[in-house]
Amino acid sequence: MKIPFNKPYMTGKELWYIAQAHQHGWLAGDGEFTKRCHTWLENRTGTHKALLTHSCTAALEMAAILIDLCAGDEVIMPSYTFTSTANAFVLRGAVPVFVDIRADTLNIDETKIEAAITERTKAIVPVHYSGVGCEMDMIMEIAKQHDLIVIEDAAQGIMANYKERPLGSIGHIGTLSFHETKNLISGEGGALLVNDSRFAKRAEIIREKGTNRSQFFRGEVGKYSWVDVGSSYLASELVAAFLWAQLEEADDITSRRISLWNTYHQCLKASESKGWLCRPVVPECCTHNAHMYFVLLPDLIGRTRFIDKLKASQIQAIFHYVPLHKSRAGIRFSRTHGELNVTEDISTRLVRLPLWLGIEDYQAEVIREVIAAL
Ligand SMILES: Cc1ncc(COP(=O)(O)O)c(C=O)c1O
Image 1: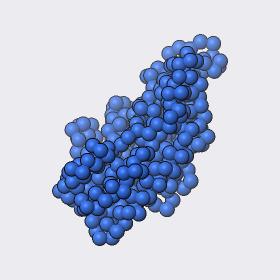
Image 2 (image 1 turned 120 degrees about the vertical axis):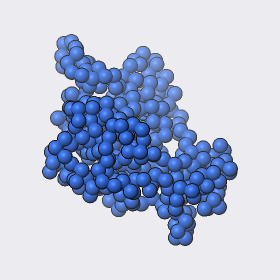
Image 3 (image 1 turned 135 degrees about the horizontal axis):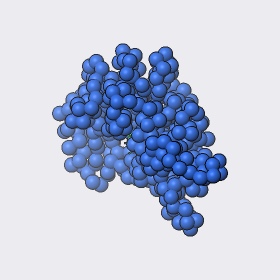
Image 4 (image 1 turned 30 degrees about the horizontal axis):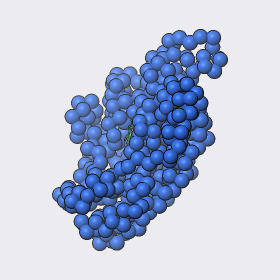
């Protein structure tokens, strides 16, 4: 494809920082670069404690261990999401309970959550689709009323805000992704944001194979040993060094992505007026991070033809999630609450356009071909 859907952006300093880590001779986790990334994340999000992980999937699994789920406990979430959102909880024997999404933001429909709560419900997992915030005030209020934990899946949400609060920092726990398809990247990578200090000490232990090694490194205990369940969820210093080069330029990367997003949005306004497509909706209270630009086409047949036409012009546009409740594992491990009509409808109509730093030279061509294909 001449114009791929995604191209990882490098700031140019990644190898320089990896070389420094190499020179220091500290290659495992929690070295100097990890500490810099932790401090940056804590300052930028206001979280109590940030912990780098090797993926957002790992951070979600840590969250599932942290909240002490028992077999049969339920976790409410949208079905229109990535598998890890649900899988992390299924690994602990819990049951994902899917509710529908809103037709505007494509985020979990906060008005449908309360009716899905049962005696077994332990947590709510809002997913901030495309870096646009869920209706967090209402979700936090519901959680408070019913004594539930909120784990934000902010895999796509770095540098985006809901009511001026960074995504991932509002629930009790938040998770971020630095996978190469995200805005800020380290190949594979992620972070756990421990916003509720109650979980901080145990989060460190779970991340370090169930040991209190983090306390030992800080000189708080004389030796470390196995104290709880856990696994190896740290990112290595090489990954942290790469990520540091990206975090340093987070503002610039985000504003350049927003400019590309705005160009799409402006240029496709007339197509929306003609009823050919619907553009994304960002509520007033949210500042997004231009994680993706998608459009909604009238139906599945139209979407398939649209994708094929762009492909013939060497432009890669792609659809997104197969709703989890329709997937083989989803049918086996989860259940739905109510009809998921919006989820099912959106999943057949949504198409994502290429958005990456460097596409500036080709964006006019993409827009021309998009309008021609419509
Ligand atoms: C909503 C959501 N949650 C979780 C993940 C998993 O992230 P990672 O690839 O860092 O494990 C993704 C990745 O695309 C995602 O989009």
